[in-house]
Length: 153
Image (cartoon, rainbow, N blue to C red; front, top):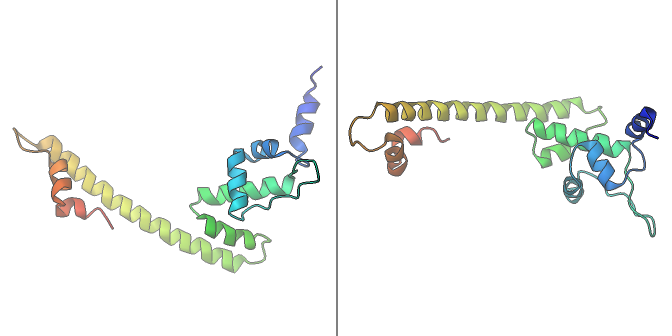
């Protein structure tokens, strides 16, 4: 018979996991695990003779770290650097990486704001056109007009 404690025991036991169970516990798929291993973000455990590789809680934590960093916009190379600093004693270096990422994010946001302004103008121009005048958006893109060109960095 099924027991509620069996389920919670399984969820709490994050040691000796097969790659499929490990991937599920980390919230990714098996191919993501293999990709991280190829990129050097996750070590591939030794394979005992005639057996399968096993993963543990530290591996789950590491994959979750990588996914969290990706959600903040860090590249895999930047994440590799953050993993090198993950013992928590290199706060100044980690802060420097985060400041650089923040600068990048702000630049992207400024680019997006410019793109939004240009697109908004073009949409308004499309709605305001009269008669058989060509579509301002298409004309702008075809002609490389300064209006569309200003949206790009």
